[in-house]
Length: 249
Image (tube, rainbow, N blue to C red; front, top):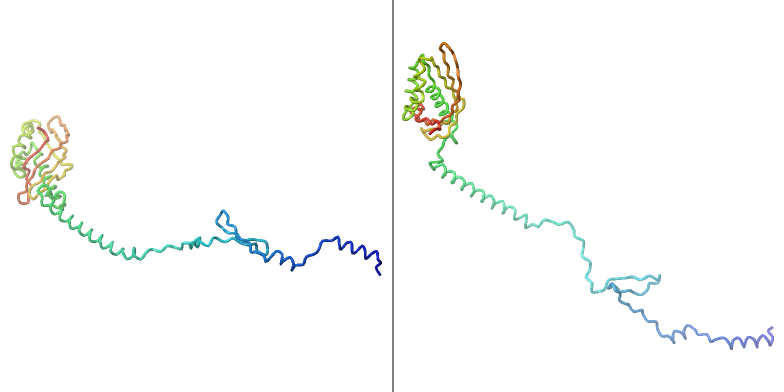
């Protein structure tokens, strides 16, 4: 049972202690709790109230546009595919027009006199003319002292026009010395080319080897190379040499 002294001490402690406030009195004194205001940040984001776990959630401002979707695989427009046949059609027309123009131009060139050279286009005629004229050159530029008549027949057969006089001048010295030195002149065409061929006219460039043999007491053979051009005309099936060009003035 407490004594009078204990009661007195208890009253003194209660009088010295501050008065206690209840939760209801504290709420009435401070009023209802206010929601924390969002403060703008330098990066344009707003900080919301703290979550119960003490973390904050950031979200972009309301006026920012939503993020753009990631681009997917690009597809070729249908318009390009539809235009492909049109482009091919235009190219076909252009190529056709070019072919027609080229054909017409080629025909015009063939009609020009300077372009009428069968040596560039007709292999068969060119080969035939080359062979016949080569035979004629071998025959008329060969001479045998033992049968001069053969040389004369070759000249009569394969020479015409100005070439008759040119041939006589070129072989005059051979005819003069042949009986005394017993000369045999043999000409062999080694290479030739048809420079021009038009109808019954042709020009042939000739490379030939000439062998001059003295069959007398002191037999001796000399060799020489010759280059010249001949103008030829065709009479029937025979090509005749009409002019001889030795490229000398």
